[in-house]
Image (cartoon, rainbow, N blue to C red; front, side, top):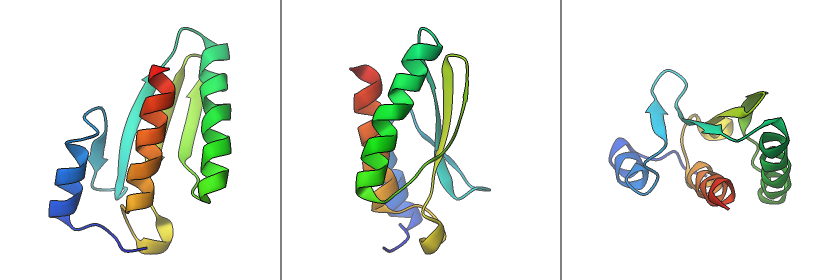
Length: 96
C-alpha cells in the first residue's frame, strides 16, 4: 500500500469534509458525537467488524457519547487508500 501524495490527500479529503489532516500524526482525524454511550459503542462495534474484515484498524478512543478517530497506515508511513475507505465507511455508519 502506497502512501498518498499531498495532492492526492487534498483531493481525497474533498470527499470527506468532516475529516482533517493531522500533519504530526500523518493521519486523518475526526470526532463523532452520538446521543449517548450506547449509540457510540454500537457505532464502534459496527466499525470494528468492518475494520477487521478490511484488516485495517483505527486508532480511536471513546468517552461517553464521543468517539475520536485517527486513521493512518503505519506500514506505509502515512495516509493511504485504506484510510480513506475506512473513513467513508465510518461516515456512512454514523449517518445511518
